[in-house]
Length: 220
Image (tube, rainbow, N blue to C red; front, side, top):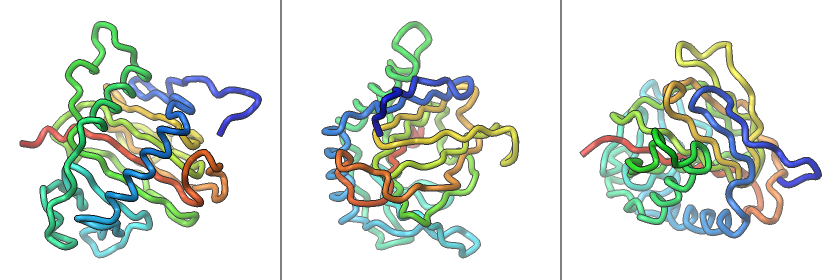
């Protein structure tokens, strides 16, 4: 979502970096096309069901490993038992490029060893939300790479101790990158609001928001 006043790269918290408009329009459209293909199967887009029976408002499809609250598996035993689509090499390379954009590639950067093997793709319509939660089903403490395409949202990035304050609200627009690792790897975060109709034609989407999170699970 370009404007007269470019949005700067921002360190939101130690290890948590927001890079606006990192994905150029053509890359956004390529990712949208890939997500549409993954959503057709072998495991289709679905609303995840929580252990207590609640149904998440986002729709989700996974690549590499299937995630269901709150574990990973090779097969989608809660959907159709199929093995999920393989995690492509080009997506892992995109994740490493994202870490360079967020952290640089100097001494101490996690780029050299970063090997994401799973992507969780969430689709938000105008009413979908994501409650405050931690990404802690992985055995690896490697950073999480988050890519936004389509409608703008409010991304609430909190602390590592609880779901309440202190937290910071960040607007994530189409093409934005957000990476969180290091001291912020297990920070609570969520999406309390989506702004329908803000995607713009360059996103390749007519409506809604796609969020791809690349993760290194640390699983065999």
